[in-house]
Image 1 (cartoon, rainbow, N blue to C red):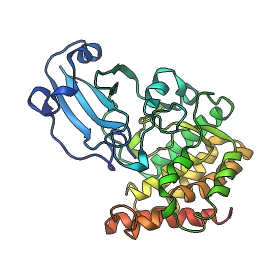
Image 2: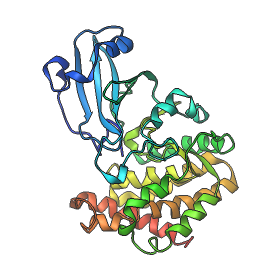
Image 3: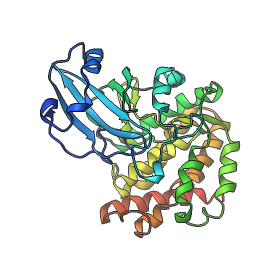
Image 4: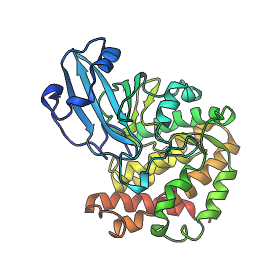
Length: 334
């Protein structure tokens, strides 16, 4: 789900002077000096008001006309078991992974096509939280199928390179951890074949994966596209991020449900062309179809109101379209 500025998590708030709001404590003077070179009066715009995983909140902070994004993390900040953070560095949801990835240049293998936001400053706070001060990339993009396909092409180029230059420090097992709390809600045939499918995915070529390649996490530009929220990055099968991009674009109503076949095909074709390698493309096709269908095999339970709050009619159309399209693709591999 989107880290900031996205349709999934963002609510509408007005900018509020930091010393006149409940957010006064989130911008310590020493951090403001480190980031802005000034501790003048700041304004704060909340971008994610509800905790999730290790994220306490995300804010756009402006000091004297200069802005930055503050992402505040704390182990166990969110109560949702589906995204529970971990204290273990080898766990797919280690709560400090984003700092590790940004500070240690872990993501350089994806350049120049994709880049993370610039890490401006990081601070461990006395209460045990971690403050990440990040480049402000502006407002979310307005997406079309063509624009999403262009990003998918860049993703393919970058992930092809990362297959042979996979950082050793990357954790494995994201999809297993993601599915664990959802097992009882998975639809057939994915419920009974879950372990078999996961083993097949593990045996395919692996690359540096974002695992939340949601449109709201992507800030496109002409030459280099910026991508935020690397909290879950790790080692994953080639093609997985492309599947997330397509499925989340439908499920979160970025692209209308009636455009599902066109969207899913356009993203796949662009990603395949970016890979420019027949063997990798064959592996990625299996991951794109079968892996994505497995990841979202809980969608039918969600639409039925059996898992979490039932989506409204409009969103249900997108969720149903995403599920049906990828289940159809998966049948070639079951």
